[in-house]
Image (cartoon, rainbow, N blue to C red; front, side, top):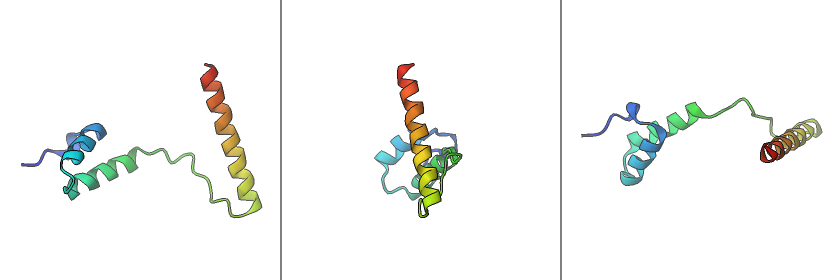
Length: 73
C-alpha cells in the first residue's frame, strides 16, 4: 500500500523516493511540489541582446550586493 503523497512534505517525498526509485507517481508528485514552491518572481530574459545582457548584469550585481550585506549582518 502506497503512502498518501499529498500529506508528505518535500523532505518526506525525497526520502520515500530515494528508497523507492522506480515509483513514478512519487517522482511526479515531488517534481510538481518543487515547481509549485519555486519562486518565479526573479526570472530574467535570456541575455541575447545588449539590452538583456545589461539587465542580467545589473541583476547579478544586485544579487551579489544583497549577499554581501547579508554576510555582514
